[in-house]
Amino acid sequence: MTVTILIDLETRQPARGEVMRLSKLLRSLASHCPGYEGGITWCDLGEGKMFLIAHHWQSMEQWHDFESDPRAAGLLVQLEGIAAKPAVIRGYTSDVDVS
Figure 1 (spheres, rainbow, N blue to C red):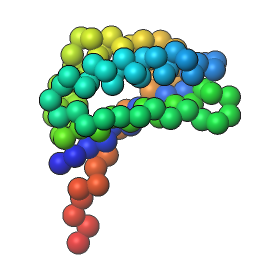
Figure 2 (tube, helix red, strand yellow; figure 1 turned 180 degrees about the horizontal axis):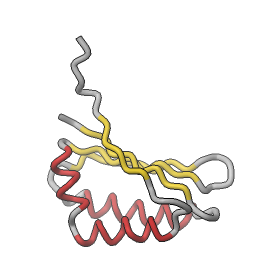
Figure 3 (tube, one colour; figure 1 turned 45 degrees about the vertical axis):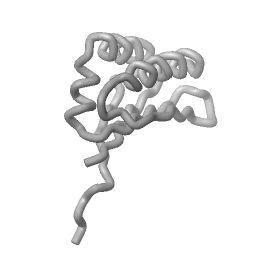
Figure 4 (cartoon, one colour; figure 1 turned 90 degrees about the vertical axis):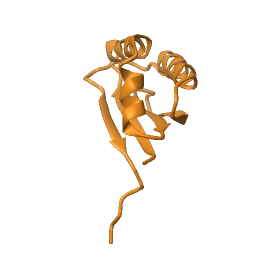
């Protein structure tokens, strides 16, 4: 089941450059992991303090393997360090049978 992980992040002050730098490092690291399919980071059009970081994985287990890697965990801690409040990380899928 393909999953999309969304990291919803709000920073204390405008931080486009730092969030983009850290999210690119996360994607670069993830690109070497089994099951990673890609990702993108969105920034709000207003003050530049709201971000959505999306990662696409072949399974939730592969995401969990990635986030438990010490290097990935370190980057996530750095993102939390500039956050105004704890980031919300959720997994989503479109592979749901609604019949």
